[in-house]
Image (cartoon, rainbow, N blue to C red):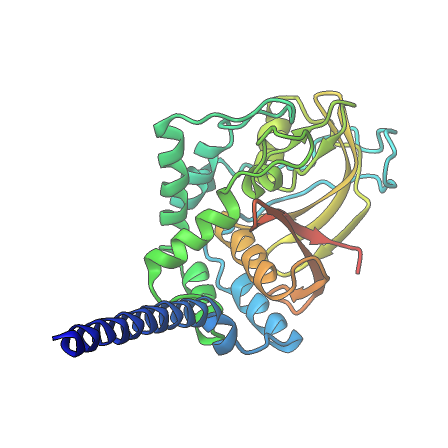
Length: 315
């Protein structure tokens, strides 16, 4: 009887040890699968070459059927930081209002008044304003420009083929909130910084790269156009740099892709965010004119977001 009890005890010990080993094996297996899933994108991804960037950006400009045809009065040339007014007239002398009725323009316009300009004040959003962000992503993804970008990124292993997942990716990098200027104040997003502007405590403007917002402010008499620094004709758009005098706040210079549709600027910005974050991203217009795009990133709470996105004359 004693032998039987000892055998039973030994059997139980062996069984317990086997169960522990099986549990450990299961845990390790789950961890391996999780790590594999998280790194699957990088394992599948293939490098995006400069030649591919040039070809795709040219095609995106060519296919930008929603872009506006603007007439610009550049007037006098000036230098970065100069507040001397070398342009007595307006910059945009044509009327883009009919273009603003197009779905992506209308969706972009709906977002422009949703943000605090003062970086010391944390943004809060109503359900309607959050819905406007979703509506914007939905609208741009209906366009050929964004669909072409999506297909390219999928082909390079840089995006999910699932449209809903890609929309979530866009929403995260462009509308995800982050803090940079005032510790603890979550006052910024890439879309806000790029397409509207933010004002620092010293009355200096940061961001502000949307020609749509520029037109609105010039139309309201709040932007004083001082002249241009550099310009490039890209076939369908004009890449322009200029000093900024906005509400009496200033910026040494800012750059715009004048006439581009919201989806074109979003597509190029997303492409360069993926392919060339924080380094020069070489692109070209529909006429083959080459220029550089800056997509700066910011990492906040472990997540990478767009900080700013715009053309530049600095290589």
